[in-house]
Amino acid sequence: MGKRREPRTEKNLPVRIFGTDADGQIFSEKVTTVNVSQQGAEISGLKASLKLDEIVGLSYGPNKSQFQIKWIGAPGTPKAGRMGLLNLHLEKAFWDFSLPGAAQDEFQASTGERRRYPRVRCTVSVELLPEDASIIWGKASDLSIGGCYVEMPIPLAPGTKMKVGIWIGNDKLWAVGQVTNSTPGFGVGVKFIEMAEADTRRIAEFLKTVKDH
Image (tube, rainbow, N blue to C red; front, side, top):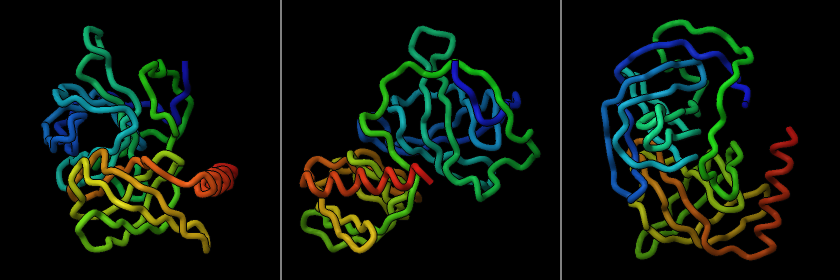
C-alpha cells in the first residue's frame, strides 16, 4: 500500500483527455472522473492506449492543465479503462469547487512498468536542433538521464530526431534525442538515445542536488 498526499472526493465530471497515445498518434477523448483531489484525478472510460509516466492534457470547462499518468488499470480487472493522473501545474486552479486539504489516504500502488529513469521536476533551458529545421529554444519542466519534457505551444511530431542542448548552470550538455509523445498546446516528451558519459554524470549530479532540496 502507498500513501496519497491528499484524500480523493468522489465526483463524476465530464472532462477531455488529449495528447499522444502509445502508438504516437494524437488522440482526444471525452471521459469521466471517478474521484478528484487538488493534485490529481482518477478517470474512467478511456479507450486510447497510453503509457505510464507520460504527460497528457486534461480540460474541464474552460480550464486546461498538464497531468502525468501515475497508474493505468490492467485489462480484465475492475480498474480496466481507468487511469490515475497527477496535476503538474498546481499553481493554477483546475477544478471550480473546493476540495479537502492534504492528508494521508491509503491506496493500492500501481505494479505496472515504470519509466527506467524517473523524471525530476525542475526547470532548465534547452535548445532543440531537429534534422533539416531551425533551432528551437525552450524550457524543460522535468529531466532525467534518460530524457526530458520540453514545453512548447506547437510541438514536434512523435519520432522526430534531433540534437538536444541542455544547460546545467554554465555547462551546456549535448544528447541525441527523439520525440516520444507530443501534446498540442503543452509540449513534447524527449528520450535521450545517445549522450557522452561525462554529460550523463553531470546530469545525474544536478538531479541529486534538486532532489536533496
